Every structure is written in C-alpha cells, then in structure tokens.
Image (cartoon, rainbow, N blue to C red; front, side, top):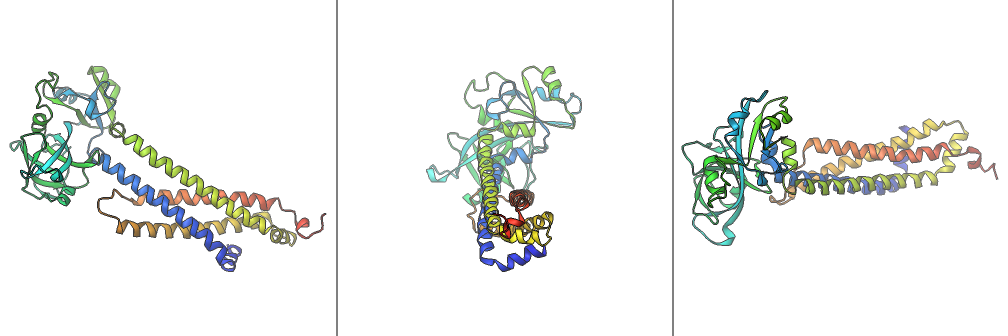
Length: 373
C-alpha cells in the first residue's frame, strides 16, 4: 500500500485522468440504476407494496390483471385452502380524471382505478384524510402525486367517458400503477365503472380481476388443481406479468450490463498500458529482490484506492444530481442499490487489475537491466 500511495502522489495527473473517467462511469451507473428503479416503482409500486403473498388469476391470463376475470365467489373457497390466512379481491381499470366539471383536455389526468374491499389488507396506509368505507361508494383515496395536478381533499372529479363522479377522502403515498397515480375505490364501485357496458362482465357473478392471498407456504399447484380455471402465482410473478414491465426492466439492466463491461475493459486497458510503460522499473525492482506478490499487491492497492475514491465521488454527484432533478422525473436511488452497484464496480475494477498483475509476473529482470539480447 505504501508503494501504491507513493506512486499515486508522484503521478497525480496520470492517475487523475483515470479517476475522472471512472467517476463518470460510476456516476452514469448510479444515474441509470436510479432511473431504472424509478421507472420500475412507477410501473408497479401498488403491486410491490401490497401486503399480499400470492395472486389468483384466471387461467391463461399470463398473470395479467387486464386479461383476467374471476368470480368473487372463489374467495370463500380460497379461505378454506391450507395455509391461507386472508383473502381479498382486486380489480383494475385505466381511466382519466376530469377535475370539477371541466371538459378541457388539459384538465384530464390519467389514473389507474383500483377496486378493493375497504379495510382489507390491500388498502394502503393513509397519509392524509380518511380511509375507505363500505357505506360510501363514491369515495376514493388517491396517490399524493395528484396534489401536483391541483387535486385536494374533498375535491370531486368526473371520469372521462362516464357520468360517475368520485370524491377524494384521503391521500396515500407511493401508489402508482402502469406509470400513473392509483385511485382506490370500493370493489362494488369499481364494478360499476369497469362493467358499465351490458355484457362486458361475460356473465361472471361479482367479477374481479384477481384475488389476493396472504399466507406462508401456500401451494399454488394445489389451488389450481382444486379450483379449475385458476392460475395462482407469487406476488413477484404478478409484477413481472404486468404489461411492459419485464421489457422495460430488461432494457435498463442490459444498458447497465454493457456499461459495467465497458468500465471493466477501460480500467483494465489503462492499468495494462501503465504497467507496460513501467516494465523496466518493475524489472529492476525484481532484480533487487522484490517479489511478484509484493508488486502485484502494489498494483491492486492502487486500483482499490483509485476505484473507491472515484465511486464515492460518483455517489456524491449522483445524489447532487437527484436533488436538482424535476419532480416529475421517475428517479429513485435506494441505499441498497447504491451499495450493490458500488461493490460491483469495485470488484470489476479489482478483477481488471489482475491483467496487469499477470503481466508483472512475466517481466524478466535481466531484460530490464539490458543483460539479455
């Protein structure tokens, strides 16, 4: 470590250039991970935060709410299944809220209407106002991002293409679905909105899109065998079944993978070139008794110090960038993600330095002294 720090202080400009490049790479990795996590949260935070362990869909729906239609009568049968502690139906439709009685396009706000049973485990925690009640059908609780659109407690909005009006009685936090604000309403009110057209319920009694289950060690196969026409999956699989979710996440992850691979190549090439430039110096040090292990540790220590410092600067720049980002931008940087990608970047840089260590081990001290022709 002493030799590594000594050279870092001696060749400040050379190592500063590498550090700047690595800072930019780490900065970009953290920005992309924050944007990817933000988009993921915006697409499925309602599913991700709900206190459900399994989801029962219609068979053949591929774990998609929009393709599934079940009868709520199945809830009574599901409560009798082994290890099932709680059951609650759920439905979703997309819509547009029109503030007041305005019909202007600029006043329309895209929303996801989520039908749930008031007071069930699917109802999110209220941060302002009151929760849902069964005796007040046209009352809703909405995500607090609707405040940015001018909505407040007690406001009534009309649904585009419908004569129904809903009144906001409470606000919740971090509840979005398909990139829009979630609006929670009693399941009976949701049915009126979702199946307003005659025959749209396909004759299903008390239709719902899915039934959520709570419980540990539930056997999805046993449920599917006992209840024909059902497909039971974990909550994580239900999130993956949301339209476009898997593709969106896959794109971000591929970009990150390429960026990490490129960073490994760049760091490896830089230190390999530096090692080749100093081959005579390493040869002389080996001639006076320095071991390959000692020189290898010096190179790895250099990479470690340089990478760690660059990653820390990249993290600071990322949080600084996040502080000035527009509020509407889906950016969410979790501490767990920061630590994970920091570790990945550090490991990649250390592994890339092994190329230089291998080169050092092959240097012939006699050639470095000019004794071999």
